[in-house]
Image (tube, rainbow, N blue to C red):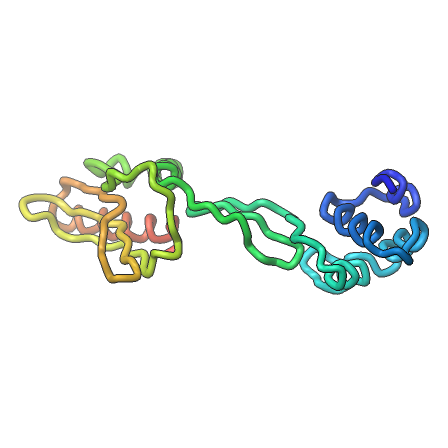
Length: 197
């Protein structure tokens, strides 16, 4: 059975994952013919994407069908696929260079005034082509400290599972006193929201 045959019987188009699931059930169930699979899809179907009910889904599970990718997701840290069983697979950490560039671009777009008041906003790691590994991250930390001789520094740092602390992004202002403290506090708040701390 072709996808257009099933869709003609249904009177509407199927999502790619729905076709894949219905086709697998049809091919692997000797008692299910074209009319019956159309009836199953139309009457009980798949329900919502994020709902594990529906006769077609149940049959697919009984037949031990392989994972079907419903969507591909991307966030600041990684990209991954979501299957019909709501499992995340094919997870790949983003390059640390790309994470830094995205954070910096967001800061420039949403907090240009803070970026303009700063002296620099740099990635501290020489591992810019390394992939982010969320499994090794225990804490994300954003804080500020007074400079030893001038200004204030804002650290975006990572504490790994072995409690090793390493700074990922370092921002600095040469502003002193209340002006420097205000910049540091606002930078910590802005950066914290962007990285989800």
